[in-house]
Length: 455
Image (cartoon, rainbow, N blue to C red; front, side, top):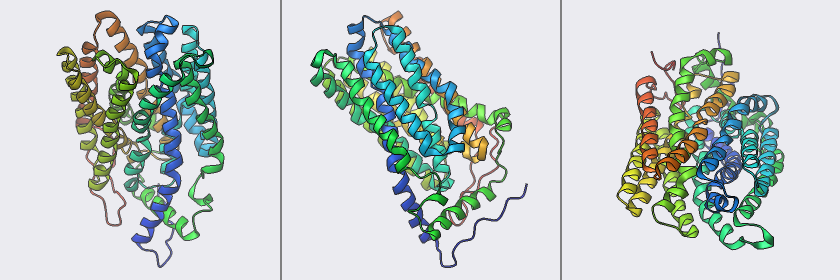
């Protein structure tokens, strides 16, 4: 099907003018997207710190915690595709408002859990409300930025996850140590309440702060809007091979290979997020404040991995090797952490987990530059959500798996070896099943080989 010519540029416009416009776009849309994603991650994984006292306080075991931590991703799985399709229809501001208010309210209610089924239901609802945030924000960026400007932007907003863990770990430790027993509530209860309310506030602000699309951005001049439209239309014309229908994308093996690849990466990431504090405690660091600062340092490496790998990927206009090598580094870190635990080396465990965080987290933003190479329109909106929702089921299985292994064997090392092997599968899939991307063309818009994955 022929594609219309790109929107015309003003006669005096230059590449430098477009660069300035996109810099302005990034500075305008990314801070809020990053901030709300930070809060989402704080509310998603603060359960890892709450666990340190919550289990004893309520008389629960590791298996109950693992099931509750993981059931979040069942809600994620069921509601993510509908959420992204709704975003395409009603816009990002209203969608993000619904998501932020919903998960914030559920996070506060977590403080009132007394039975295991309360925990399961609320974690499921938290996943259901948050569903669509991650792929929704990625889809939102595709409305504003062409592919060759997107990897670094995705890396910046996705750096919210290590930032949340970097800042959130010592914050959680401070909240728990300074509020325990205040007004008759336990430390873990205060943690859920204090970290839940900001999400509600930010959800309300979304409709006032976010702009749905460039054509409605009053903060862009007509010339700047033309710059954005020109590059997006140019990219769309050059990638006319991309699938627009979700039904066809759903039948494509490309989507399912991407799902399996991300599933393997998320398995490692969920282990770090939900069991990082427990792994550090098992290594011999028992003071909650110390655990908080150690986890902060580990996720600092995760943030560095994201930013450096995203920058290198954009600079070299290459995503296969940057995804695969980072995932390999993540798997290696988990193996070394298991070895260090067996050798009773606390410092070794910390360094190995830092290495794993840098690799695993560094691979994720670059991975997300792959789906838009062969999908657009409705296929991209639903495809991003489908990939993310199914792949994130790894977050359901990994915590339960590690909890069962720990309960059965008394150690974490066996589970770490198996999870490292799973993450290594992602490396094989990326290198064997994803075709190379062609070099960029003059003007900076990335041309790609028609990217059906595999042969």
